[in-house]
Length: 351
View 1 (cartoon, one colour):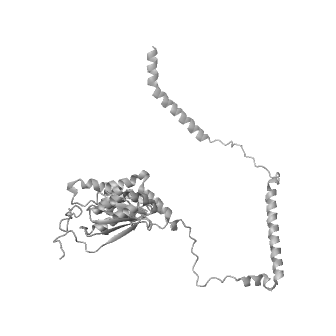
View 2 (cartoon, helix red, strand yellow):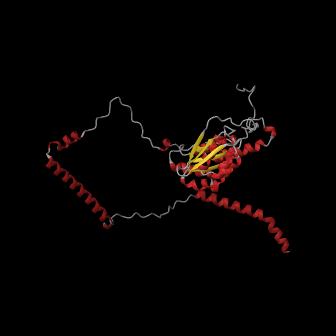
View 3 (cartoon, one colour):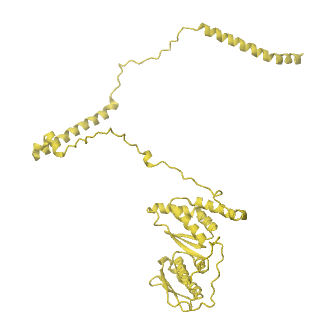
């Protein structure tokens, strides 16, 4: 019988899940299940060193592990001692992470309750390889700073290798990592989401804002409108509409009939083509010779040089001159009145 909750569970992420223990559940697996994972040749040395630790760790959960170096794969399978039926899936995920260059110390965390992994494919999103490499570098950041900020904000271990991104952490953190990786591959810079996550982390510390909507605190980034290609293309003006169709272009036979070439035999046609070629070559040679001789052609000296006339008009505006003199006298009287007190002080000081 399925358990149906009476109401919707609020704050499900923070709800503590009861621990699954070994007591009273031994021998629950009735059939054998197994998963195999291949690994690249460059990981063979590392996997060979750490596989005894993998085997020892999985034996505690009743899972059997095998390593085949000849065929290049790892195998995990359930046994009669397996007490957690879901542990076979976690063991499979652990082998996948080891084959994708994740160190053993991080991959073994997948076996814990509440921690899972997610392998995000980045190669299929962008068809152009150069664009994919640039966006992958944008996700890593200078000296890995963007990737480190992503790990601190999501509490997940993130490793980018080739065309995939492997993440280990809680389910809530993995959802955030997948969102950022998908947005980066769709040409949205990760710094926008990282800035939003930083603000959300600060808002979580305030108990008064726990049950409120945080939308007003989060930044909204407007997309920059770039000039579209259609706006830069120069379009030809539309011709006036006519109900008649355009004239049919002349065919090759029509052109030959007009020039008389149609009635010539093969030898006459070849001779005509040679003649036209010679005429065009002669015209081109003539133009070339004229261009070469251009610097040696003397200029025409018979053309008279135009001299600028420096003759000034003798007409004087008497009224304008009188007005100018009057203005000059007024200025002098004003300056003299302003300087009168200073002149008297200087005279007194001399006495």
